[in-house]
Length: 64
Image (cartoon, rainbow, N blue to C red):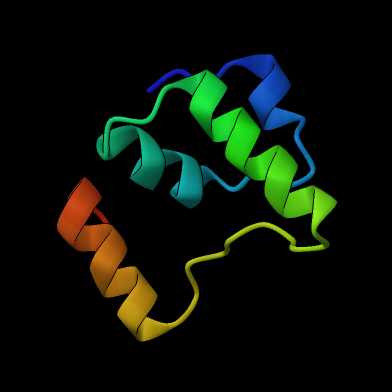
């Protein structure tokens, strides 16, 4: 999967979050808009660190 440079430089970029969102059918523009809104509201990147989050990620992307 190829991530565009602007998204990789985004303050809320996380490779797992990007993989999850693209697997769900989100476009790069939709992802950027979501991450912009989250950053503006003070939320940092989604890190997919808990076991339940890793399980959800694996179910959608096929990797943990």
